[in-house]
Image (tube, rainbow, N blue to C red):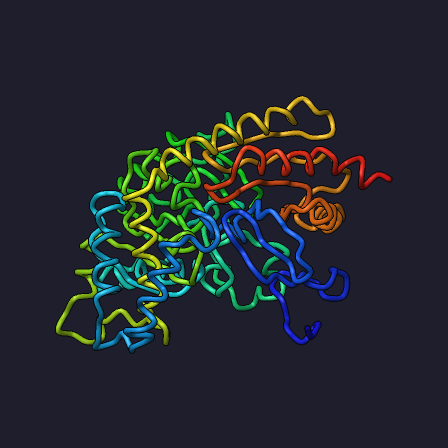
Length: 419
């Protein structure tokens, strides 16, 4: 297999090991080219929910590809997209009424930002500023990088990025600072939208905050007429313990971004859900008020069929029970490390657990990060730490025995790397 012809994401080819060839996946496990098994403890970048190659999703893909593979979605439609949209509105927080399809988490958020700005322009109000939570990560396109935290991810692209109002993260005991800052930002009537990862920030370090704070941020936005965008690309589909994190705060965002687990992790598909007022602001005989966004593969029929099968699994299988069971397993496993002096700051929400390895140089580029990845692979576990932050986000089919392997690998890491 050719090496370094393919340019891999978030990979420094000058220092990282050669990419590991994977040939098969089933349930929580991957199989390498040389027949080794690797436990997928991060759901292949947070996308695989029920496990690799769930039979219902695989069958739906096979069935759809024999009927319709692709059709332009401007001026045409098809049953998989229409039915999926109905299913999404049924399962999403109440009040969301329209579904716009795209291809990835980044584009789902890019669409949301454009919807928000288009809304204010079309109703004739000069609101153009975006507010975002400190340490947030929303993707790698220009708009999403602008909304995300500035740092190593996007330093080279700074000339392309627009300024946003940065709201401090609600650290425990300092939530009021966050609420005061958001309230101040909304007072002058120029803030178009506030975007947030509900309850937990992913790439920003698996930082967790409370549902009460999320609810209060929504109330502040309502008070000032600011559109509230919930980026549930990672938090959606049960990761925080409920289908959507917003449910725990009992809020409905004006715009909701979904991707990753939307197809159960099988195919790339994203959806941006909006309330009726967002749609109505773009609904006009004036064609300049059209929502000008698309991609060639918008609402691909095969991807939509996979997503429909995923929602069918949620309706027909005990997914909620599996999530609750996995959350309990994570709680017990994380507790085994909580008293270990080599680690600090254990935290968990739903099926997501994280802990920090004590090192002199923390942060995303901590030198320990690549060494940790290599160590975990030697133990047959796929983990991809955020610097010295080790997180576990496995598929819902993960067993107690599987999880024990993961935490054994984590526990052994400090001593192994010190040798």
